[in-house]
Amino acid sequence: MTDTHKSELYYPSEDVIAQANVSDYQALYDYSVQDREGFWAEQAAQLSWFKPWDRVLDESNAPFYQWFVGGEINIVHNAIDRHLLNANRNKMAIIWEGENGQVRNYSYNGLNREVCQFANVLKSMGVNKGDIVTIYMPQIPELVFAMLACAKIGAVHSVVYGGFSQEALASRIDDAQSRVLITADGGWRRGKAVDLKSVADEAMKRSPSIEVCICVKNNELDVDMEPARDFWLHDLKALPIASPKCETEPTSAEDPLFILYTSGTTGRPKGMLHTHGGYAVYTSTTHRMAFDIKPEDRWWCAADPGWITGHSYIVYGPLINGATLMLYEGAPNYPYPNRWWQIIENYGINILYTSPTAIRGLMRFGDRWPQKHDLSSLRLLGSVGEPINPEAWKWYHHVIGQDKCPIIDTWWQTETGGFMACPLPITPLKPGSATKPFFGNVMKVVDDQGNAVAANEEGKLVIENPWPGMARTIFNDDARYQELYWSQQADGHWRYLAGDSAKIDDDGYIWVIGRMDEVLKVSGYRLGTAEIESALVSNHNVSEAAAIGLPHELKGSAIHTYVILKEGATASKDLAVELREHVAKEMGRIAMPESVEFVESLPKTRSGKIMRRVLKARALGQDEGDLSTLEE
Ligand code: WT7
Image 1 (cartoon, rainbow, N blue to C red):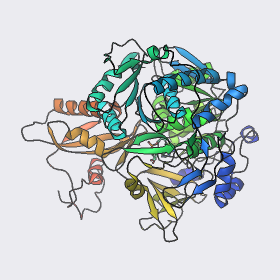
Image 2 (cartoon, rainbow, N blue to C red):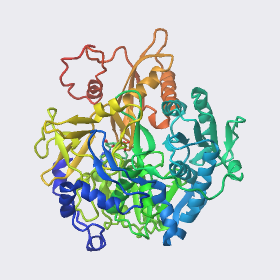
Image 3 (tube, rainbow, N blue to C red):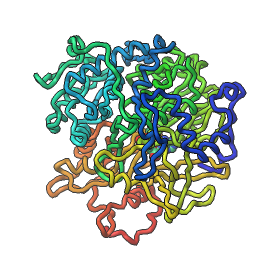
Image 4 (tube, helix red, strand yellow):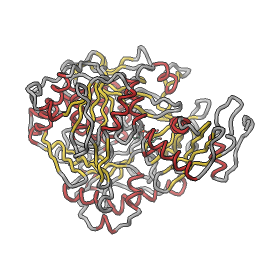
């Protein structure tokens, strides 16, 4: 990927340069790493604080860093309340379009009324500051209202992506010990109603901590409502308790804002914990600088709010910056492959932020679909989730951006809260590279001994400093957080290990290659091999299982599995289908394996660890590498 593309530079136009929020990357970067606290204090000063911080950064308990210590803030005070005092009050905050063409709009004032009502409903259900509320919803405005309502009263939200199934939902509810679950009857996908409440019902059977379930009516699905546990939101909103006025609770900068579960090396998903202060500063600063946000912009991050991309760049960053955001619930190619391009034209979207897998998926329908539409409102394009292949990059740039929109390829993670490496609109671009570190960050590529490798050599991507948007810990597991991500260096400073392999070229451009651990990126979704394997083993026919990722044209990588059956079970095509369906049911459709192969044994180390790299090499017909630890 590197050599042929290294020479190919795309320069921003005069027009883009003239209006850029940041006009000199290097000067600001140098300052931001020389005086990191000074830089972040200036950014934090752009927000509204109930009480200013005493210290920007407290490193006394590193790697458990604290930011803006002593400060009092609430992210919702910044995302909504302060806009009500100025011209943003009547500005559009959210434009939502449903797959069947339904449209709902909310001004900042309207958004505030919805969030206040929802917050009052939560209070009436006994939700207090610090309580963790689980949210399992389709991509509808109420998902955003629910998140903001929790934050407003100082409660902590834990959003579980609406595409996940009962097992994934139940385990996340259990880990968080949530008392309250917010869900909906169902969502829409490809013209069909997708059931959510019945999945939530199954999850609640397995998760005794839930005492209250608030259900949003989104389609006409028949659902079971258990008396004294399940309530319709519209019924609760009609009660006098649900007034459209509610004070925003001051929280300390380090109070928890949300938990978001993500996959890692071991079976159990990790609940990454983010806080009010640093996260508000980091998401709004990265969004404003990397995407050059202007007051009149219509911003569309086409992710699901249920992932970190949606938390940071649908909900919090854009609302803090007072942008107008687009939300669309449905498939990108329904009823036709021009759906997204139609949305861009209809609403005059200025910035589109999406994933390589979505771009590849729409690219395959050809140029004629986007060409039917006036896409001239677009000024910038963004990419996130996995390395973008130069072919998709060029199509996005040429056909969608009409050669005039810089592509902001943002590298970051659930753990980092916001962009860690990305260009600014003024940065010369190389297709497939996330370019340079964001302000304040020092990034390196190191070898197994921790020494920086030479330019263009592959190694582990690390970050040498704390940043305000960083996760503070893994919920209830400080030890695992420190062990998985941080190592102290000889000079005493702590280094963050991202889990990705990467190269840095002669010009200092970062090229992320992919995950090094047992994590797969399937259509940009992060899945752990261990989670897929335990889903397979939970089927009564399966004794052992291994999952690997193999290259896939649209998905980036696809899941292939190897299964050893129990005594008495017989391999068959039907059983393979059953097992694929079983994984989809346990985890969600995004985790459904591409293939199930029945085997007699699996390559393992002497200590019993499955050697997935050997399976992968075999599947690809490549050299199996060092087999000295193999005991098959
Ligand atoms: C992993 C994190 C951050 C929001 C969505 C994913 C990969 C993410 C890029 C990019 C190359 C990327 C990395 C990273 N990744 N963005 N622009 N270029 N790789 O968040 O689910 O926590 O996954 O996604 O492998 O470690 P996530």
